Length: 242
Image 1: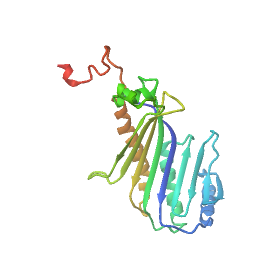
Image 2: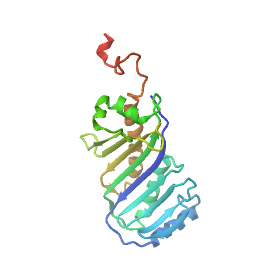
Image 3: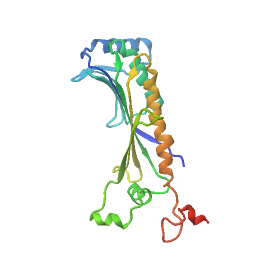
Image 4: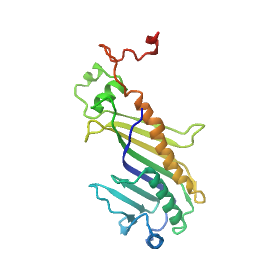
């Protein structure tokens, strides 16, 4: 089962050894992008933690910026229209253009967070969907004595022999819309040489692929019409087919 995803946040941090909080290299970068036409960010300002490049966002609560902090580049796209592909390319471009200007010797790691909303096709309340279909909870929940206003799970996937990175996963009901599932994927990646900054783009794409190719099919397994009868799990056991 396929789902259209509504991405509400694209976040990325590139960690590096501390550098002096000098805004001049970033102002130079901003000027160079404008001279080249179609700059990734329109605005330049100096914040309390360091220089920031940003774009105006019409959506309430929206953010579009990259902050050049003492020990990291911090990219934030929240409630905007940027696709994950454009975001990944933007992270790479800014990293490539700013690394030499700031004399960064290496990136110690990359942290990526993707937040999306998905609507199950056979349920209108995601609390019930998670509680009864994904977790299989029945009367056991009554023992808690109160009705859960938020239902969810959190999983962590560490490195293994085939994958050197780690993924974190949160799947929860969404308080602002009972029909939507809130999905957050966190990707953690190791050191990146400054000569190979194409990796920062591919890491964003790998994190999004984990959402689309792994998480959504996992949810789709539970997103199906219940068979008729009194037992909501009837017909789900392969042994019943015989």
